[in-house]
Image (cartoon, rainbow, N blue to C red; front, top):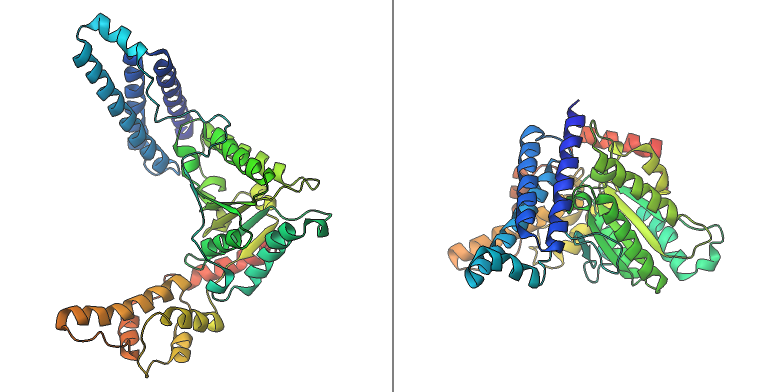
Length: 395
């Protein structure tokens, strides 16, 4: 029952938003203002009545965007009134002015990306900058790098969908960024929630626009990596869904199927990352032919990571990196980076307080940090990841 009410409100907001956009095109700013105000009022009701649904964040972002659009419209209307004076002239002159570019842009196909997509991977990241994860690296090389370099060696096609799953802070985003740099490709970073946040009811057009842009660039000769972080927010199973979510999921499924054409040499890849793979819907799990577990670092990876991180700072002679790597079992790569950073910060803090130094980082600094820092990943959760990997993994 709740989902039916929410879907009705969503449809009404969408109708008011469409009316707002059409009124802007027609120069009827009074109607545009009325429509956007009604949409904001409905969004306020949705946020108040359904604070815990998966789309709550989307509605809040949308409400803020609509508010900015209304404020922009108010400024234009006020300027026109002061400049022209008189209601009749005001209406005529508004029609002569260039139309306001709506904050709620159309998402029809074009050569431009939706504004929720960030372009570009972190510069110079390669696999050498990522400690361990050899199985994951090899699987990505076979799925993306080799087919791009020698596509004729893959007459049966190659995977276009790759799922990276595992605990937070293990390097999933870095893996995707590194492969984009390795093939000199275009890296498109997508926030899953952002796909539906720009324009209620048109999330599927956002998906279509994203893939249309990627295919165009790939046909021009540039490999494209579409990286979708927290993909479970987009393709997960939820207790209640509204029509907009279902349409987005169906459109994404259609686009993923379109990439799997074995006769096509197009190099567009979707890399999804998630900390909650068990929330993904089964049809989407199958679309990711490679499903790669990105685990916590083992001893060798922890030692390699410590050496990489501490190479940038001065260490005292008593620092035992091998012993420290053994003690850091259960910590993620992100945890380890934070530990090294905190240990170094102790010496910086002393320098500013005493004016002496800065001194090298000692083993005692690491000991003090470890007294306060515990692993960010629960051991029980690790068992769940390992179970899911046994049931769904596909290297």
